[in-house]
Amino acid sequence: MPRVAVIGAGPAGIAAAIQLTRAGHDVAVFERDRAGGNLWNAGFVENYPGFPGGIAGKNLARLMDEQFQDLGLAPRNADVREVRKSGTGFTVVTDKEEEFDGAIICTGTVPRKAGFPGEQELVSAGLLHYGISRLKNLAGSGDALVIGGGESSMDMALSLAEMGQKVVLLHRSEPRGIKRLLDEVAGEDSVTLLQGTVLGARIHGEKAVMHLETSTGKEEKPFDLVLVAVGRERNLPALEGIDADDPPPGLRMAGDARHGGLGQAAMAVGDGVKAAMELGRELGK
Ligand code: NAP
Image (cartoon, rainbow, N blue to C red; front, side):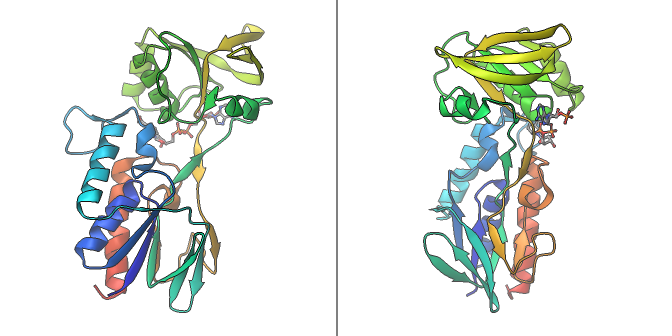
């Protein structure tokens, strides 16, 4: 029975692993965090068929994980550092090395940094995050700054508003996204849109003091929390003898790891199933 490694258990990896298992492959899933991937950061998902009225990202992640566990597909908690072409198969390198006949890389994306002075200090102090998935117990009506301008930043701003935060959404260009989301943000009293850039940041007491430049000039503003959502980039393990954009036989890329940060769970799922079916045929199942 061909052994297949699925690397990453976001929507693409989950779908690929389910499909491979159905086809009778011996599947090992590697995941360094928890199954569900970036869905944990999605406030609300409206375009995933089967959920009339939409579904909270974290609930969809939980359901995917449940289906996954039901099939006995619990991922191995491991950070895949490298995937190497080796003979007719592939070596997957974690803290050990394992051989597989085929592999599907579904390692998604990582958030981009905003790049202003003081960003890393805010991260270290726990005042700045790149997603909402790990935010817990936000104190009442704190002041939050979301830096972005795309759909992720709007989704995060709406989630924070729902958690009782007063949110400033700082965008350097015209906000871009689907009309429904733009309208929702515009209609949310707890979210204020502000055009401008961050010049720097410092910590004062328990606050992040942000040095902003807006149309009214330069000013410093304190925030209890800063979220950065300025886009995402492909997240790949080191690859040896493998071109991610032209993968060799026996290997597939799926989801956002394949086509950049399109950030659509429905697309990643379809992509994962397609990769699994193609690979299955190739490996003779
Ligand atoms: P995005 O669409 O690429 O938007 C990134 C935003 O950040 C842009 O407004 C960009 O402004 C700004 N930006 C980039 N670098 C910056 C910097 N250094 N400082 C300040 N601002 C900066 O990324 P995204 O919002 O993560 O969305 C990615 C994909 O995920 C999209 O396809 C989206 O549809 C999908 N998604 C959708 C939802 C949803 O709820 N519908 C939620 C999450 C993600 P410039 O234009 O000036 O570069």
